[in-house]
Image (cartoon, rainbow, N blue to C red; front, side, top):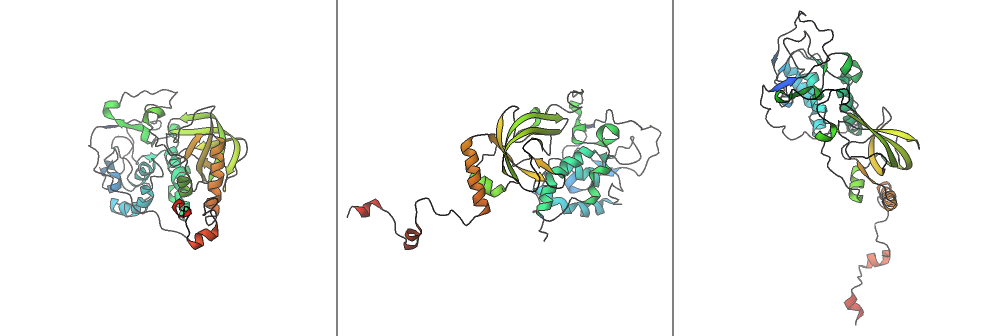
Length: 330
């Protein structure tokens, strides 16, 4: 049975001050000719969810064939609950690039599409949430139909920077990204406790040694060698080298190469991927922590068991008697 989507997010705040933004499309202009025919005129963005984003002009029909922004507003409202879960830092950008695509009058006759990687990051982070509520990732937002960053014209968050930062470094080492991952990421630490484990209900728990952390532009992947599988779900986990995928340009929780961790995270069943996303846990491996996790998982699987404290009998609970030291002195 399908459940309701999560509640809407809090207000996103007022739009950013307009004007001081630059769209960096270096290397993406192959195939564009200045004399290309123009489509419909650009118009001001009126979608409330998209007004905080760093472009203020769009063009209709959009990529989902809505002929007016009024229609696009109604259609986009269905994602308010999903946005409220903050399942992906890329979701709002991706949705707005589809529903209120950026319009540059002097660029090309059609509105610019979001890059495929932006869609994939949004889907990786948010599809598990949709599946939890009985919904699938919409076919209308299929990532395979979108252009690849280095093979066509598309837009991504990393291609939009403040005008005063237009001289950002561009080289092959950082994939034409603005700055490095370490400069942008602030991970909120989550400690492995029984309360957190029972609340988050992780899909997998593994003991693993980090072999490498790969960062290509805003896509970060951790390559780990699985030493022990403490919990698994629908995605098969081999005792071998596996990839842990993020849903943004940040590796949260952080991992260091050649260190051994206990890692708790989620999975993307459809693509058989293990995810390391916000809310996941990675702590340096300790034997006693591994034993604790096994006990916590038993409580998660059998919540009715183990309620009595060790050494406390059922009879003493039923009678309500206490072991007050003062009573023994009589």
